[in-house]
Image (cartoon, rainbow, N blue to C red; front, top):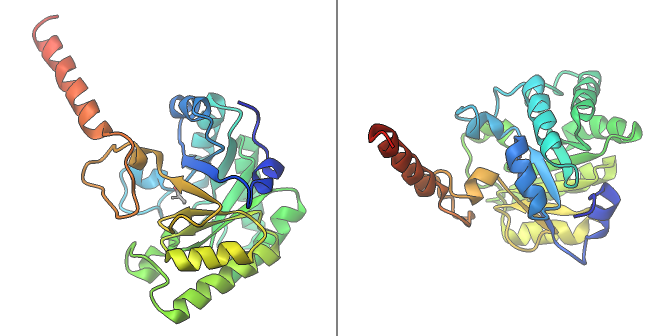
Length: 255
Ligand code: KIV
């Protein structure tokens, strides 16, 4: 595989769909690269799938940087995006710049921030310093307490307008791509048609410029996690459990 750069990713809009998965370590990064996936996201979802938290709020910038270093060691070719975790950019633009610089120094090629107009001053500043930014609108997990959970967004016309306006605003501020999470397919299609930058969907239908999934989810790591948008490509839950059972038996049997 060849190195995937931001210009290459952006040039895919309208011609070829962009594949993205989350990735948190070198072992999976190696396989992500072998599979020819365009981009890996060191998401703050690591709080849930790695640390076992109920939401993404308790992830620190140091933790994301730690996983960025690991993923980067495992693969050079996929374009590596790092999440700016909750509390690493909300205080001020300066705090956001410092946090983004840590992630870029750790090996990220872009940072992702959640929100609309409230993150635009930060987006503009970051891109002015050559730090690419992926925006994230719709079901933004860092707003879980405001939303009251992880249910889909865009259920009313007013909410749809807010999400569309947010997408247009972050594009205007200089965002290089936008993640559209947990919104109606029609809204995602509308946004994708209206912005010039690539949209990457998760739970947003098929009409975005690309798709992202949490790697453990698509590999079926947890049999009890079955959101309607998730297609599982493997049943790692039972494969791993059965392998571990066999291993245990061999140990117990002295083999
Ligand atoms: O944290 C994450 O993994 C994400 C993706 C699900 C988009 O933000």
